[in-house]
Image 1 (cartoon, one colour):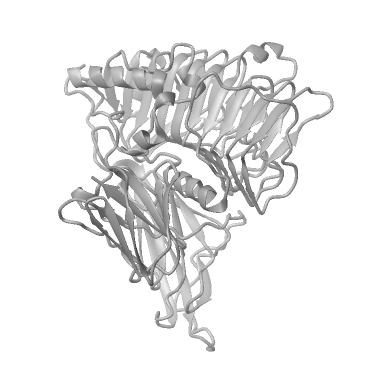
Image 2 (spheres, rainbow, N blue to C red; image 1 turned 180 degrees about the vertical axis):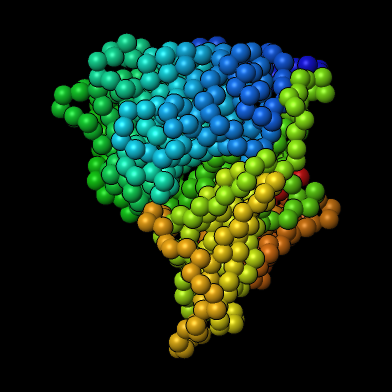
Length: 588
Protein backbone atom coordinates (compact mmCIF):
# COMPACT_ATOMS: atom_id res chain seq x y z
CA UNK A 1 0.00 0.00 0.00
CA UNK A 2 1.27 3.43 -0.85
CA UNK A 3 2.10 5.96 1.83
CA UNK A 4 -0.87 8.24 1.07
CA UNK A 5 -3.26 5.36 1.70
CA UNK A 6 -1.61 4.55 5.01
CA UNK A 7 -1.93 8.17 6.04
CA UNK A 8 -5.57 8.20 4.99
CA UNK A 9 -6.34 5.08 6.99
CA UNK A 10 -4.73 6.61 10.07
CA UNK A 11 -6.90 9.66 9.49
CA UNK A 12 -10.01 7.49 9.18
CA UNK A 13 -9.22 5.59 12.34
CA UNK A 14 -8.69 8.82 14.26
CA UNK A 15 -11.83 10.28 12.69
CA UNK A 16 -13.84 7.25 13.74
CA UNK A 17 -12.64 7.50 17.31
CA UNK A 18 -12.89 11.27 17.54
CA UNK A 19 -15.48 12.06 14.88
CA UNK A 20 -18.05 12.93 17.52
CA UNK A 21 -15.83 15.73 18.70
CA UNK A 22 -15.75 17.37 15.29
CA UNK A 23 -17.95 20.42 14.92
CA UNK A 24 -20.74 20.10 12.36
CA UNK A 25 -19.38 23.08 10.47
CA UNK A 26 -16.03 21.36 10.05
CA UNK A 27 -17.71 18.24 8.66
CA UNK A 28 -19.88 20.16 6.22
CA UNK A 29 -16.91 22.16 4.96
CA UNK A 30 -15.79 19.20 2.85
CA UNK A 31 -18.67 17.14 1.45
CA UNK A 32 -21.44 14.71 2.41
CA UNK A 33 -18.76 12.06 3.02
CA UNK A 34 -18.93 12.39 6.80
CA UNK A 35 -16.74 10.69 9.41
CA UNK A 36 -17.99 7.70 11.34
CA UNK A 37 -19.95 8.47 14.49
CA UNK A 38 -22.26 6.61 16.88
CA UNK A 39 -21.90 3.21 18.46
CA UNK A 40 -19.44 1.91 15.84
CA UNK A 41 -16.83 4.33 17.25
CA UNK A 42 -16.87 2.41 20.54
CA UNK A 43 -15.20 -0.90 21.47
CA UNK A 44 -11.97 0.18 19.76
CA UNK A 45 -13.74 1.79 16.77
CA UNK A 46 -14.37 0.46 13.26
CA UNK A 47 -11.76 0.72 10.50
CA UNK A 48 -12.66 -2.14 8.14
CA UNK A 49 -9.81 -3.08 5.83
CA UNK A 50 -7.78 0.00 6.72
CA UNK A 51 -4.68 -1.84 7.91
CA UNK A 52 -4.64 -4.31 5.04
CA UNK A 53 -4.13 -4.30 1.28
CA UNK A 54 -6.54 -3.13 -1.42
CA UNK A 55 -8.05 -4.87 -4.41
CA UNK A 56 -10.37 -3.69 -7.20
CA UNK A 57 -12.85 -6.26 -8.51
CA UNK A 58 -15.22 -6.32 -11.48
CA UNK A 59 -16.71 -9.83 -11.28
CA UNK A 60 -18.73 -11.67 -8.69
CA UNK A 61 -16.27 -14.55 -8.27
CA UNK A 62 -13.47 -12.24 -7.15
CA UNK A 63 -15.84 -10.19 -5.01
CA UNK A 64 -17.06 -13.22 -3.10
CA UNK A 65 -13.59 -14.69 -2.72
CA UNK A 66 -11.91 -11.55 -1.37
CA UNK A 67 -14.87 -10.59 0.84
CA UNK A 68 -15.07 -14.00 2.51
CA UNK A 69 -11.31 -14.22 3.05
CA UNK A 70 -11.30 -10.92 4.96
CA UNK A 71 -8.44 -8.56 5.75
CA UNK A 72 -8.91 -6.38 2.67
CA UNK A 73 -10.24 -3.10 1.32
CA UNK A 74 -12.29 -4.06 -1.75
CA UNK A 75 -13.30 -1.50 -4.39
CA UNK A 76 -16.13 -2.75 -6.59
CA UNK A 77 -16.44 -1.62 -10.20
CA UNK A 78 -19.90 -0.64 -11.57
CA UNK A 79 -22.15 -3.57 -12.36
CA UNK A 80 -24.69 -6.03 -10.98
CA UNK A 81 -23.31 -8.81 -8.80
CA UNK A 82 -25.36 -11.86 -7.82
CA UNK A 83 -25.12 -12.53 -4.06
CA UNK A 84 -24.69 -14.12 -1.49
CA UNK A 85 -21.56 -12.10 -0.60
CA UNK A 86 -20.26 -13.40 2.74
CA UNK A 87 -18.06 -10.81 4.45
CA UNK A 88 -15.21 -11.81 6.72
CA UNK A 89 -13.50 -9.69 9.37
CA UNK A 90 -11.44 -6.55 8.75
CA UNK A 91 -13.12 -5.77 5.43
CA UNK A 92 -14.19 -2.61 3.63
CA UNK A 93 -16.59 -3.00 0.68
CA UNK A 94 -16.76 0.27 -1.27
CA UNK A 95 -18.75 0.48 -4.48
CA UNK A 96 -18.14 2.71 -7.46
CA UNK A 97 -21.35 4.52 -8.50
CA UNK A 98 -23.63 1.95 -10.14
CA UNK A 99 -22.90 -1.14 -8.01
CA UNK A 100 -25.85 -3.43 -7.21
CA UNK A 101 -25.62 -6.71 -5.31
CA UNK A 102 -28.70 -8.88 -5.84
CA UNK A 103 -30.24 -11.26 -3.34
CA UNK A 104 -30.77 -14.84 -4.56
CA UNK A 105 -34.16 -16.55 -4.28
CA UNK A 106 -32.86 -18.16 -1.07
CA UNK A 107 -30.28 -16.49 1.15
CA UNK A 108 -28.92 -12.97 1.63
CA UNK A 109 -27.43 -10.45 -0.77
CA UNK A 110 -24.73 -9.47 1.75
CA UNK A 111 -24.17 -11.56 4.88
CA UNK A 112 -22.07 -10.35 7.82
CA UNK A 113 -22.21 -13.29 10.22
CA UNK A 114 -19.93 -13.35 13.25
CA UNK A 115 -17.48 -11.00 11.54
CA UNK A 116 -15.68 -8.16 13.25
CA UNK A 117 -14.66 -4.71 11.98
CA UNK A 118 -16.58 -4.37 8.70
CA UNK A 119 -17.45 -1.31 6.59
CA UNK A 120 -19.97 -1.44 3.69
CA UNK A 121 -20.44 1.77 1.67
CA UNK A 122 -21.92 3.11 -1.55
CA UNK A 123 -23.76 -0.03 -2.68
CA UNK A 124 -27.34 -0.92 -3.66
CA UNK A 125 -28.59 -4.26 -2.39
CA UNK A 126 -31.65 -5.48 -4.30
CA UNK A 127 -33.93 -8.16 -2.91
CA UNK A 128 -36.16 -10.60 -4.74
CA UNK A 129 -39.31 -9.01 -3.31
CA UNK A 130 -40.81 -9.21 0.16
CA UNK A 131 -42.96 -12.31 0.74
CA UNK A 132 -44.20 -13.65 4.07
CA UNK A 133 -42.11 -16.82 4.23
CA UNK A 134 -39.10 -17.88 6.25
CA UNK A 135 -35.96 -16.74 4.45
CA UNK A 136 -32.97 -14.46 4.99
CA UNK A 137 -32.66 -10.69 4.81
CA UNK A 138 -31.32 -8.70 1.90
CA UNK A 139 -28.44 -7.44 4.10
CA UNK A 140 -27.97 -9.58 7.19
CA UNK A 141 -25.91 -8.76 10.30
CA UNK A 142 -25.97 -11.77 12.57
CA UNK A 143 -24.29 -14.07 15.13
CA UNK A 144 -22.29 -11.65 17.29
CA UNK A 145 -20.98 -9.50 14.46
CA UNK A 146 -19.24 -6.51 16.04
CA UNK A 147 -18.08 -3.05 14.99
CA UNK A 148 -19.97 -2.71 11.73
CA UNK A 149 -20.51 0.49 9.73
CA UNK A 150 -23.20 0.45 7.01
CA UNK A 151 -23.09 3.77 5.14
CA UNK A 152 -24.66 5.21 1.97
CA UNK A 153 -26.41 2.02 0.89
CA UNK A 154 -29.86 1.48 -0.65
CA UNK A 155 -31.49 -1.76 0.47
CA UNK A 156 -34.86 -2.64 -1.03
CA UNK A 157 -37.28 -5.51 -1.70
CA UNK A 158 -35.64 -7.84 0.82
CA UNK A 159 -37.18 -11.33 0.84
CA UNK A 160 -37.67 -11.46 4.63
CA UNK A 161 -36.38 -8.06 5.79
CA UNK A 162 -34.31 -5.37 4.16
CA UNK A 163 -31.60 -5.31 6.84
CA UNK A 164 -31.86 -7.04 10.20
CA UNK A 165 -29.36 -6.88 13.09
CA UNK A 166 -29.78 -9.86 15.42
CA UNK A 167 -28.21 -12.46 17.74
CA UNK A 168 -25.93 -10.37 19.96
CA UNK A 169 -24.48 -8.28 17.15
CA UNK A 170 -23.08 -5.11 18.65
CA UNK A 171 -21.40 -1.68 18.16
CA UNK A 172 -23.06 -0.84 14.87
CA UNK A 173 -23.72 2.42 12.99
CA UNK A 174 -26.15 2.64 10.05
CA UNK A 175 -25.92 6.02 8.33
CA UNK A 176 -27.05 7.90 5.20
CA UNK A 177 -28.87 4.83 3.89
CA UNK A 178 -32.22 4.29 2.19
CA UNK A 179 -34.77 1.52 2.76
CA UNK A 180 -37.68 1.03 0.36
CA UNK A 181 -39.97 -1.50 -1.32
CA UNK A 182 -41.29 -1.54 -4.88
CA UNK A 183 -44.29 -3.24 -6.45
CA UNK A 184 -42.14 -6.39 -6.66
CA UNK A 185 -42.89 -6.86 -2.93
CA UNK A 186 -46.31 -8.37 -2.27
CA UNK A 187 -46.46 -8.41 1.54
CA UNK A 188 -44.20 -8.50 4.61
CA UNK A 189 -42.74 -5.09 3.80
CA UNK A 190 -41.08 -5.01 7.23
CA UNK A 191 -37.73 -3.31 6.82
CA UNK A 192 -35.44 -3.55 9.85
CA UNK A 193 -35.55 -5.89 12.84
CA UNK A 194 -33.12 -5.20 15.67
CA UNK A 195 -33.39 -8.25 17.94
CA UNK A 196 -35.40 -11.24 16.68
CA UNK A 197 -36.78 -12.99 19.75
CA UNK A 198 -38.15 -12.16 23.20
CA UNK A 199 -36.37 -15.24 24.53
CA UNK A 200 -32.85 -14.11 23.53
CA UNK A 201 -32.12 -12.31 26.76
CA UNK A 202 -28.38 -12.20 26.00
CA UNK A 203 -29.26 -9.46 23.49
CA UNK A 204 -29.75 -7.17 26.49
CA UNK A 205 -25.96 -6.86 26.64
CA UNK A 206 -25.60 -6.27 22.91
CA UNK A 207 -27.52 -4.61 20.02
CA UNK A 208 -25.93 -1.21 20.62
CA UNK A 209 -26.89 0.49 17.36
CA UNK A 210 -26.93 4.04 16.02
CA UNK A 211 -29.18 4.81 13.03
CA UNK A 212 -28.71 8.35 11.69
CA UNK A 213 -29.52 10.25 8.47
CA UNK A 214 -31.38 7.28 7.00
CA UNK A 215 -34.54 7.44 4.86
CA UNK A 216 -37.43 5.04 5.25
CA UNK A 217 -39.36 5.75 2.05
CA UNK A 218 -41.66 4.18 -0.50
CA UNK A 219 -43.49 0.99 0.38
CA UNK A 220 -42.15 0.41 3.92
CA UNK A 221 -44.99 -0.71 6.19
CA UNK A 222 -43.31 -1.58 9.49
CA UNK A 223 -40.00 -1.98 11.39
CA UNK A 224 -38.14 1.30 10.95
CA UNK A 225 -36.75 -0.32 13.12
CA UNK A 226 -38.55 -2.77 15.44
CA UNK A 227 -36.38 -3.16 18.57
CA UNK A 228 -35.95 -5.74 21.29
CA UNK A 229 -33.34 -5.25 24.05
CA UNK A 230 -30.18 -3.33 23.22
CA UNK A 231 -29.54 0.40 23.30
CA UNK A 232 -30.65 1.90 20.00
CA UNK A 233 -30.17 5.56 19.05
CA UNK A 234 -32.54 6.60 16.25
CA UNK A 235 -31.44 10.14 15.40
CA UNK A 236 -31.86 12.62 12.51
CA UNK A 237 -33.66 10.16 10.21
CA UNK A 238 -36.43 10.79 7.67
CA UNK A 239 -39.76 8.94 7.52
CA UNK A 240 -42.04 9.51 4.50
CA UNK A 241 -43.67 6.16 3.70
CA UNK A 242 -47.40 6.66 3.19
CA UNK A 243 -47.73 2.86 3.45
CA UNK A 244 -46.53 2.85 7.07
CA UNK A 245 -48.71 1.28 9.74
CA UNK A 246 -46.02 2.27 12.26
CA UNK A 247 -42.43 3.54 12.16
CA UNK A 248 -40.40 2.70 15.30
CA UNK A 249 -41.71 -0.17 17.46
CA UNK A 250 -40.55 -0.90 21.00
CA UNK A 251 -40.62 -4.58 22.01
CA UNK A 252 -39.23 -6.67 24.84
CA UNK A 253 -37.03 -4.52 27.12
CA UNK A 254 -36.19 -2.20 24.25
CA UNK A 255 -34.12 0.84 25.19
CA UNK A 256 -34.57 3.42 22.43
CA UNK A 257 -33.61 7.08 22.13
CA UNK A 258 -35.71 8.54 19.26
CA UNK A 259 -34.19 11.97 18.73
CA UNK A 260 -34.64 14.84 16.26
CA UNK A 261 -36.17 12.77 13.46
CA UNK A 262 -38.51 14.07 10.74
CA UNK A 263 -41.85 12.25 10.36
CA UNK A 264 -43.96 13.40 7.38
CA UNK A 265 -47.24 11.80 6.31
CA UNK A 266 -46.85 8.60 8.35
CA UNK A 267 -48.90 6.72 10.95
CA UNK A 268 -47.71 5.93 14.47
CA UNK A 269 -44.20 7.36 14.65
CA UNK A 270 -43.87 5.17 17.77
CA UNK A 271 -45.64 1.89 18.42
CA UNK A 272 -45.45 -0.69 21.22
CA UNK A 273 -45.61 -4.43 20.80
CA UNK A 274 -47.01 -4.95 24.31
CA UNK A 275 -46.68 -1.73 26.26
CA UNK A 276 -47.80 -3.04 29.64
CA UNK A 277 -45.73 -6.24 29.76
CA UNK A 278 -42.48 -5.78 27.89
CA UNK A 279 -40.81 -3.09 30.03
CA UNK A 280 -39.59 -0.96 27.14
CA UNK A 281 -37.97 2.42 27.73
CA UNK A 282 -38.38 5.00 24.96
CA UNK A 283 -37.43 8.67 25.01
CA UNK A 284 -39.05 10.77 22.24
CA UNK A 285 -36.81 13.85 22.05
CA UNK A 286 -37.31 16.94 19.85
CA UNK A 287 -38.83 15.15 16.84
CA UNK A 288 -40.74 16.91 14.03
CA UNK A 289 -44.20 15.67 13.03
CA UNK A 290 -46.17 16.79 9.98
CA UNK A 291 -49.41 15.19 8.74
CA UNK A 292 -48.86 12.24 11.08
CA UNK A 293 -51.40 10.29 13.11
CA UNK A 294 -51.17 7.88 16.01
CA UNK A 295 -48.80 7.63 18.95
CA UNK A 296 -45.82 9.90 19.56
CA UNK A 297 -45.50 9.35 23.33
CA UNK A 298 -42.60 7.49 24.89
CA UNK A 299 -42.36 5.90 28.33
CA UNK A 300 -39.63 5.85 30.94
CA UNK A 301 -36.17 7.26 30.20
CA UNK A 302 -33.89 5.75 27.59
CA UNK A 303 -30.11 5.56 27.79
CA UNK A 304 -27.71 8.45 27.26
CA UNK A 305 -25.12 7.62 24.59
CA UNK A 306 -21.50 7.37 25.76
CA UNK A 307 -20.34 8.98 22.51
CA UNK A 308 -20.83 12.55 21.36
CA UNK A 309 -22.35 13.49 18.03
CA UNK A 310 -23.71 16.66 16.50
CA UNK A 311 -27.52 16.47 16.23
CA UNK A 312 -29.38 18.62 13.70
CA UNK A 313 -32.16 20.73 15.22
CA UNK A 314 -35.60 20.05 13.61
CA UNK A 315 -37.68 22.18 15.97
CA UNK A 316 -39.55 24.02 13.20
CA UNK A 317 -40.58 23.38 9.61
CA UNK A 318 -37.71 25.25 8.00
CA UNK A 319 -35.12 23.28 9.96
CA UNK A 320 -36.96 19.98 9.45
CA UNK A 321 -37.22 20.57 5.71
CA UNK A 322 -33.51 21.38 5.59
CA UNK A 323 -32.73 17.96 7.06
CA UNK A 324 -35.32 16.32 4.78
CA UNK A 325 -33.79 17.90 1.67
CA UNK A 326 -30.29 16.80 2.64
CA UNK A 327 -31.30 13.21 3.35
CA UNK A 328 -33.32 12.98 0.13
CA UNK A 329 -30.33 14.34 -1.78
CA UNK A 330 -27.59 12.20 -0.26
CA UNK A 331 -29.02 9.02 1.34
CA UNK A 332 -28.14 5.90 -0.60
CA UNK A 333 -25.12 5.23 -2.84
CA UNK A 334 -24.23 8.85 -3.66
CA UNK A 335 -20.53 8.85 -2.74
CA UNK A 336 -17.86 9.38 -5.41
CA UNK A 337 -15.81 6.69 -7.10
CA UNK A 338 -12.45 5.97 -5.51
CA UNK A 339 -10.09 8.72 -6.57
CA UNK A 340 -12.87 11.00 -7.78
CA UNK A 341 -13.77 14.34 -6.25
CA UNK A 342 -17.33 14.32 -7.55
CA UNK A 343 -20.18 13.74 -5.13
CA UNK A 344 -23.43 12.45 -6.65
CA UNK A 345 -26.41 14.45 -5.33
CA UNK A 346 -30.03 14.06 -6.40
CA UNK A 347 -29.82 14.87 -10.10
CA UNK A 348 -26.29 14.11 -11.15
CA UNK A 349 -27.26 12.49 -14.44
CA UNK A 350 -29.37 15.47 -15.41
CA UNK A 351 -26.75 18.06 -14.55
CA UNK A 352 -23.70 18.56 -16.72
CA UNK A 353 -21.03 19.75 -14.33
CA UNK A 354 -17.88 21.53 -15.34
CA UNK A 355 -14.76 20.40 -13.59
CA UNK A 356 -14.69 23.64 -11.64
CA UNK A 357 -18.12 22.94 -10.13
CA UNK A 358 -17.60 19.45 -8.85
CA UNK A 359 -18.10 19.00 -5.13
CA UNK A 360 -14.96 17.95 -3.35
CA UNK A 361 -15.15 14.96 -1.07
CA UNK A 362 -13.21 14.57 2.13
CA UNK A 363 -10.13 12.44 2.40
CA UNK A 364 -12.05 9.31 3.29
CA UNK A 365 -12.08 8.08 -0.30
CA UNK A 366 -8.79 7.33 -2.01
CA UNK A 367 -7.86 5.73 -5.32
CA UNK A 368 -6.68 2.17 -5.30
CA UNK A 369 -2.93 1.97 -5.15
CA UNK A 370 -1.13 1.25 -8.38
CA UNK A 371 0.40 -1.67 -6.55
CA UNK A 372 -2.92 -3.04 -5.35
CA UNK A 373 -4.16 -6.35 -6.71
CA UNK A 374 -6.73 -6.18 -9.48
CA UNK A 375 -9.21 -8.69 -10.77
CA UNK A 376 -9.70 -9.34 -14.46
CA UNK A 377 -9.64 -6.25 -16.62
CA UNK A 378 -12.60 -3.96 -16.10
CA UNK A 379 -14.76 -2.32 -18.72
CA UNK A 380 -16.14 1.16 -18.55
CA UNK A 381 -19.75 0.14 -19.31
CA UNK A 382 -21.65 -1.91 -16.75
CA UNK A 383 -21.68 -5.48 -18.02
CA UNK A 384 -25.01 -6.97 -19.05
CA UNK A 385 -28.38 -5.53 -19.98
CA UNK A 386 -29.90 -2.62 -18.09
CA UNK A 387 -33.54 -2.38 -17.10
CA UNK A 388 -36.03 0.28 -16.00
CA UNK A 389 -39.02 -0.50 -13.77
CA UNK A 390 -41.72 2.11 -13.20
CA UNK A 391 -43.09 2.99 -9.75
CA UNK A 392 -45.13 5.75 -8.18
CA UNK A 393 -48.75 6.85 -8.37
CA UNK A 394 -48.36 8.88 -11.55
CA UNK A 395 -49.01 7.23 -14.89
CA UNK A 396 -46.43 7.30 -17.68
CA UNK A 397 -49.32 8.50 -19.83
CA UNK A 398 -51.17 11.41 -18.27
CA UNK A 399 -52.91 14.66 -19.14
CA UNK A 400 -52.09 17.97 -17.49
CA UNK A 401 -53.06 21.60 -18.04
CA UNK A 402 -50.61 24.43 -18.69
CA UNK A 403 -49.28 25.71 -15.34
CA UNK A 404 -50.26 22.51 -13.46
CA UNK A 405 -48.04 19.85 -11.93
CA UNK A 406 -47.86 16.31 -13.25
CA UNK A 407 -48.37 13.37 -10.88
CA UNK A 408 -44.83 12.31 -10.08
CA UNK A 409 -43.53 8.84 -10.93
CA UNK A 410 -40.10 7.23 -11.16
CA UNK A 411 -38.10 4.38 -12.67
CA UNK A 412 -35.76 2.11 -10.73
CA UNK A 413 -32.49 1.59 -12.63
CA UNK A 414 -30.82 -1.82 -12.69
CA UNK A 415 -27.52 -2.70 -14.35
CA UNK A 416 -26.62 0.89 -15.25
CA UNK A 417 -25.13 3.96 -13.61
CA UNK A 418 -27.77 6.58 -14.46
CA UNK A 419 -30.42 7.72 -16.94
CA UNK A 420 -31.41 10.63 -19.16
CA UNK A 421 -34.74 11.75 -20.59
CA UNK A 422 -35.82 13.49 -23.79
CA UNK A 423 -39.15 14.85 -25.00
CA UNK A 424 -40.65 16.22 -21.80
CA UNK A 425 -42.80 19.36 -21.94
CA UNK A 426 -41.27 22.59 -20.70
CA UNK A 427 -41.16 22.62 -16.89
CA UNK A 428 -41.17 18.84 -16.39
CA UNK A 429 -37.78 17.33 -15.55
CA UNK A 430 -35.97 14.07 -14.94
CA UNK A 431 -34.07 13.79 -11.66
CA UNK A 432 -31.74 11.01 -10.52
CA UNK A 433 -31.98 10.15 -6.80
CA UNK A 434 -29.60 7.31 -6.07
CA UNK A 435 -30.67 4.74 -8.70
CA UNK A 436 -34.26 6.01 -8.96
CA UNK A 437 -35.05 8.35 -11.86
CA UNK A 438 -37.96 10.70 -11.06
CA UNK A 439 -40.21 12.47 -13.57
CA UNK A 440 -41.82 15.50 -11.94
CA UNK A 441 -42.49 19.21 -12.23
CA UNK A 442 -44.98 21.89 -13.24
CA UNK A 443 -45.78 22.37 -16.91
CA UNK A 444 -44.81 25.89 -17.96
CA UNK A 445 -47.71 28.19 -18.74
CA UNK A 446 -46.00 28.89 -22.07
CA UNK A 447 -45.71 25.20 -23.03
CA UNK A 448 -47.49 24.49 -26.32
CA UNK A 449 -50.56 22.26 -26.00
CA UNK A 450 -50.13 18.81 -27.48
CA UNK A 451 -48.86 15.30 -26.86
CA UNK A 452 -45.25 15.06 -25.67
CA UNK A 453 -43.78 11.60 -26.08
CA UNK A 454 -40.81 11.25 -23.73
CA UNK A 455 -38.16 8.54 -23.53
CA UNK A 456 -36.09 7.61 -20.46
CA UNK A 457 -32.84 5.83 -21.35
CA UNK A 458 -30.29 4.32 -19.00
CA UNK A 459 -26.63 5.32 -19.22
CA UNK A 460 -23.42 3.48 -18.43
CA UNK A 461 -24.49 -0.05 -19.43
CA UNK A 462 -23.12 -2.17 -22.23
CA UNK A 463 -26.75 -2.59 -23.35
CA UNK A 464 -28.95 0.29 -22.22
CA UNK A 465 -32.73 0.17 -21.78
CA UNK A 466 -35.45 2.69 -22.61
CA UNK A 467 -39.02 3.37 -21.46
CA UNK A 468 -41.44 5.78 -23.11
CA UNK A 469 -44.64 7.55 -22.17
CA UNK A 470 -46.77 10.51 -23.15
CA UNK A 471 -47.63 13.68 -21.25
CA UNK A 472 -50.48 15.52 -22.97
CA UNK A 473 -50.59 19.25 -22.25
CA UNK A 474 -53.94 21.02 -22.52
CA UNK A 475 -54.41 24.75 -22.92
CA UNK A 476 -56.47 26.71 -20.42
CA UNK A 477 -60.14 26.13 -21.15
CA UNK A 478 -59.48 23.75 -24.04
CA UNK A 479 -60.05 20.05 -24.40
CA UNK A 480 -57.09 17.75 -24.56
CA UNK A 481 -55.77 16.89 -27.99
CA UNK A 482 -55.62 13.26 -28.92
CA UNK A 483 -52.32 11.64 -27.99
CA UNK A 484 -50.22 10.66 -30.92
CA UNK A 485 -48.68 7.72 -29.10
CA UNK A 486 -49.98 4.70 -27.29
CA UNK A 487 -49.85 4.01 -23.59
CA UNK A 488 -46.32 3.05 -22.66
CA UNK A 489 -47.30 1.28 -19.43
CA UNK A 490 -49.99 1.43 -16.82
CA UNK A 491 -49.66 3.19 -13.50
CA UNK A 492 -48.05 1.16 -10.81
CA UNK A 493 -50.17 0.18 -7.84
CA UNK A 494 -47.36 1.24 -5.56
CA UNK A 495 -48.21 4.51 -3.84
CA UNK A 496 -45.73 7.36 -4.09
CA UNK A 497 -45.06 9.82 -1.32
CA UNK A 498 -45.27 13.38 -2.64
CA UNK A 499 -41.87 15.00 -2.91
CA UNK A 500 -40.83 18.53 -3.58
CA UNK A 501 -39.46 19.36 -6.98
CA UNK A 502 -35.72 19.07 -7.00
CA UNK A 503 -34.64 20.65 -10.25
CA UNK A 504 -31.03 21.31 -9.49
CA UNK A 505 -28.11 23.12 -10.98
CA UNK A 506 -24.60 23.42 -9.69
CA UNK A 507 -22.97 26.78 -9.07
CA UNK A 508 -19.27 27.06 -8.30
CA UNK A 509 -17.23 29.81 -6.70
CA UNK A 510 -14.27 29.19 -8.99
CA UNK A 511 -12.90 32.08 -11.04
CA UNK A 512 -15.10 31.03 -13.96
CA UNK A 513 -18.50 30.70 -12.32
CA UNK A 514 -20.52 28.11 -14.20
CA UNK A 515 -24.17 27.16 -13.94
CA UNK A 516 -25.04 23.66 -15.12
CA UNK A 517 -28.07 23.62 -17.42
CA UNK A 518 -30.37 20.62 -17.34
CA UNK A 519 -31.81 19.30 -20.57
CA UNK A 520 -35.49 20.07 -21.12
CA UNK A 521 -35.73 22.50 -18.19
CA UNK A 522 -37.49 25.83 -18.45
CA UNK A 523 -35.68 29.05 -17.57
CA UNK A 524 -35.05 28.78 -13.81
CA UNK A 525 -37.39 30.71 -11.57
CA UNK A 526 -34.34 32.12 -9.81
CA UNK A 527 -30.68 32.54 -10.69
CA UNK A 528 -27.59 32.25 -8.53
CA UNK A 529 -24.13 33.72 -8.92
CA UNK A 530 -21.11 33.39 -6.65
CA UNK A 531 -18.36 35.85 -5.90
CA UNK A 532 -15.92 34.65 -3.29
CA UNK A 533 -18.12 33.49 -0.43
CA UNK A 534 -21.15 35.60 -1.25
CA UNK A 535 -24.16 34.16 -3.05
CA UNK A 536 -26.36 36.52 -5.03
CA UNK A 537 -29.88 35.26 -5.72
CA UNK A 538 -31.99 36.99 -8.36
CA UNK A 539 -35.64 36.33 -9.16
CA UNK A 540 -36.49 34.87 -5.76
CA UNK A 541 -40.10 35.46 -4.75
CA UNK A 542 -39.79 33.49 -1.49
CA UNK A 543 -37.30 33.17 1.33
CA UNK A 544 -33.96 31.60 0.38
CA UNK A 545 -32.66 28.80 2.62
CA UNK A 546 -28.99 27.79 2.58
CA UNK A 547 -28.35 24.32 4.03
CA UNK A 548 -25.09 22.58 4.65
CA UNK A 549 -24.68 19.08 3.26
CA UNK A 550 -25.75 17.56 6.57
CA UNK A 551 -29.08 19.38 6.33
CA UNK A 552 -28.43 22.06 8.93
CA UNK A 553 -29.82 25.48 8.20
CA UNK A 554 -26.93 27.89 7.64
CA UNK A 555 -28.93 30.98 6.70
CA UNK A 556 -32.43 32.13 5.84
CA UNK A 557 -32.73 35.37 3.87
CA UNK A 558 -35.88 37.15 2.77
CA UNK A 559 -35.59 38.77 -0.66
CA UNK A 560 -35.70 42.52 -1.05
CA UNK A 561 -37.75 42.90 -4.18
CA UNK A 562 -36.65 39.79 -6.01
CA UNK A 563 -32.97 39.69 -4.99
CA UNK A 564 -30.94 38.83 -1.92
CA UNK A 565 -27.37 38.05 -0.90
CA UNK A 566 -26.10 35.34 1.44
CA UNK A 567 -22.69 35.35 3.11
CA UNK A 568 -21.38 31.78 3.26
CA UNK A 569 -19.23 31.15 6.35
CA UNK A 570 -16.77 28.63 4.86
CA UNK A 571 -15.88 26.52 1.84
CA UNK A 572 -17.89 23.39 1.16
CA UNK A 573 -20.91 21.87 -0.60
CA UNK A 574 -24.30 23.48 0.11
CA UNK A 575 -27.93 23.21 -0.97
CA UNK A 576 -29.84 26.41 -1.76
CA UNK A 577 -33.63 26.14 -1.71
CA UNK A 578 -36.19 28.75 -2.78
CA UNK A 579 -39.73 27.40 -2.68
CA UNK A 580 -39.59 23.93 -4.27
CA UNK A 581 -36.52 24.64 -6.39
CA UNK A 582 -33.08 23.63 -5.21
CA UNK A 583 -29.52 24.28 -6.35
CA UNK A 584 -26.28 22.66 -5.28
CA UNK A 585 -23.67 25.34 -4.59
CA UNK A 586 -19.98 24.60 -4.15
CA UNK A 587 -17.86 27.21 -2.36
CA UNK A 588 -14.14 26.81 -2.88
